Length: 616
Ligand code: M6R
Image (cartoon, rainbow, N blue to C red; front, side, top):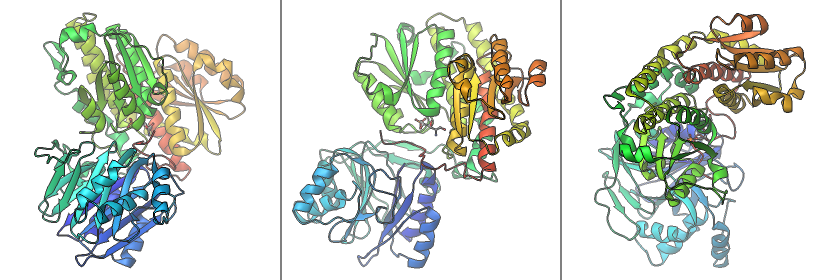
């Protein structure tokens, strides 16, 4: 969702701000803007609805000069995506500029109050109250102290925010603060930087500082950063971390889009994740920070997630219940948050699965679980993300930056990470012997090569994508773990090709969705060689009898499927049923991408979507 950048230092600010915003594009947005302060104390802003490329053109014409500034990509929540609503927003005097990510829940009361004292507003946004409140503080109790003015203003806010502010009266000073929305800062020889996440910073530093909720940081052009907490105390040793990938990891590197790159990176991501995980006591998972007896005592696991991560949760449930024999509930975070009657046991563990670590619903649910007395364990990709910081333990999947909005490599890496957890639990509670754990680990070690094999068969997906030409809708079917692969495949297709896709457990098809089928209707059936294979074959026959075009995802050598189905996406033999979802899903990722490209869409930035959904 919205992205925030800020810079103060020796360089011209506009160029870096624009580059920084370009690296935040992946978060999803519909307008963008920058505001630069010149050394003589003039504010110069450029903003527009549309892409960062449009903003670049306008900025090139306007040439805003100054070595301090802020920038923003806006994902509209309050007010349409127009030039007028784009950030930065100014106070009444036109000397204070603010960008904001988050939602100000009490903005209407604040706006009414400010208007009653003569403040005039120019936009429909919730954000605009912030510069006006800062102005009130600046001209009142905090005069001359921008950090204090920002703090006083934010004390009036309810909701969530990451705010960056500059003021024409203190050129070279940038003040940032946050509550609930992500924000990191970095000090370099060139100056000091702020950003919503590490992506824009990877080119300038490998070391970033985190702000806690309500911290206010003052960044100055010599690169200094002074952080003060909510009570006004200086934070001497802020939490910091190193960016563990080099800047090229966040670049396309010869691929035509990030989604293609990320689909291809899956084998290496799984290799990294599995490296050194098998020890003499089974799976090494020190990140859990629970003793063997504490692990053995866990009698229920509640998995909290959204979207693709929720699908990982469905597969994790099968692995944990099959291997560790611990009952698992999988909850959509957004639903869980409003289920007042949720029951936990004394030894329930909450497993949070979130690629970004910033999904607002997931964070709220994790906080609620913790409030109910549960240990919270996070599986995430983003170092230092809020989910990681708030959890009792975190397993980083180390998949590297995932830029495309459609999650691919995080999906499979999170799945394998959940298997590591399942094996750790199974050994700790005595449901599995060391030899069995070793066997499953060896099976997982085969995943990267199995994935490579599917990647080599991408021509099958390209060919099958033609079956979706001119179609309005489609059906994805599968049984057991393959029903989850069907959900994930349908989500991928919807997300980037804007083609309706309904996913169902095959056996449920007869209870409603079968009425969708007519001549030429595309049905994707995930039908690997497993104990429910023949059941799914029967469902495929029911589809074919009604004129469907069936695109099957099947195991090498399946003659029956080869004869029956119009297209087959072949998957190599896998050593265990739980390995199949990590391998077969790659066909569905590739298929979705080919269909979307065929339709002429930008696969990395699908309309209306944001990479990290930081509002509830
Ligand atoms: O960052 P998270 O894993 O918490 O994100 C959850 C969903 O928003 C995300 O998986 C979404 O469904 C993907 N864009 C799907 O590809």
